[in-house]
Every structure is written in structure tokens, then in C-alpha cells.
Length: 284
Image (spheres, rainbow, N blue to C red):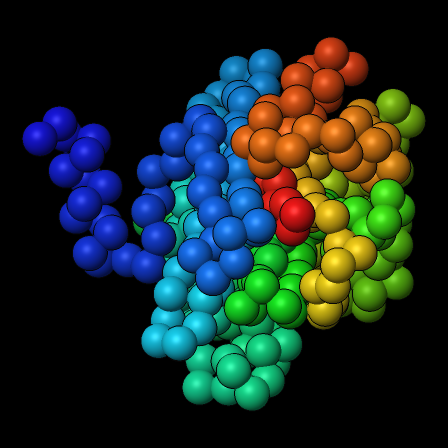
């Protein structure tokens, strides 16, 4: 058995999801054959290793099926993103109230996971990661949560609806300042927390955590016949495409993986230089 395959098998047994992500992949629901998912990743032009990770899979738990989808966009290294890829959904699902209070379970797991990352900063380093997660429950209920600027966008009857919140430093300036931090606005640069980080919420980032939140925004959507697809992507896509452009560009592409790849290729054609990861979940 090849070394990488053996490593995957070992980590599959030890953890909830596989922390080594291929560049592309796809799958479908076992409960509803009309629900499919596909993903694609592309390293940007920055002179560092790929910092994006993702989860895109369906899991059967007893009589229930969960679609688990997430984008983790690391900064100052990819260790925190990889930790989230392995642990975050596991931590959400082990919450006792997951089935009765899913939003509460997600919020609690985001907090406990961030605490664990900070406690292991000696091993994971001083970097951090944004996150956007989507849990599809039995093909009927979608729970989306996020910290940072990776984004979830739904297409309902051709209309784009953003389900996540872009946590930009300027939007949370008062909160950051109330914690003793500041937001820089230098000419030619984006706003940054303490002159460093371009998002107001993230996992990790121990040196900034006093001024930085890991509290997620959470949205719940019921899946009806009007919902066509869901896009999850890191900010490398959203820096160069608005929600409406992304939805319109893939609405006619029926294969989920091809749609995810098309979005990344479109972002590259618009000169995006960042790492880009993208998941598309189709409901028809």
C-alpha cells in the first residue's frame, strides 16, 4: 500500500474525516439521488504551501444522513486549517444537543474547537483559519455557520442568497476597540485587526485572540423544490466575483464538480492570485 494511502487509512480510523484532501472530487446522497456534491481546489501564486482545506461528504448516522461541507482558509500556515478539517465536524456531532438544538451545538463546538487550537498553539503554530461549514440534515434542513470571509451562497429560483456573513474588520471596529485592539486603514491596503489580520473573526491566531472573535454567525434554511444549489468557497473566489455572478456562471452546469472547477477557472481568469477552494452542492 502506498504511503499516502496508508496515512489516509490510519487517520480515517483515528479521526472523523480524512485530513488529506485531493484536488477534486464528487459524490451524491444515498437518501436522495438527486442531491450531488463536487469540489475543486487550486493553489494560488503566493510563495507558500496550499493553505486551504475542505470537507465534502455524506455520512450515514443510524437512520439519518448528514451532508458535511466546509471550507477552511488558513493563514500563516495551514496547520490550523488541517486541524479544523479533522476535528470541527467531529466536535459538532458529539454535542449532546446536536439533534434538538443544532445551532447551539454548532456554536458550542466552534468555541471548544477554538479553545483546543489555542491550547495546542505550541504544535499548531501562531497562525489561524477562517471557516464556513454547512450541515445538510436528511436533505431537508441546511445549517450554515462561519467565521471570517469564506462564504456560503445559495441559489433559489435563480436568485443568489448569501447565507454567511463576511466578518470584515471595519464592520466590527467598535467591538475590536472595546477589547483593546485597533483596526488599521492604510492607503493601498485592506483594513486589518491590529494592523495584521484582514478578518475580524477566525480560529486560532493566539497573538490576536484578545481582540479577535471566533463566535460564528449561523443561518438555517429549509430545502424545498425552489433551491437549486449551494456554493461554498474561500475568499480567493469572492474577491473577484460577486454572489450573482457566481450563481449565474454555473446555473446551467449540472455536474457539481464541473461547476466547482468552472468557478475557480473563472476566478483565475479574473486574476485572483489567492488559494481557492470551492464546493458545489446541487439539489436537482
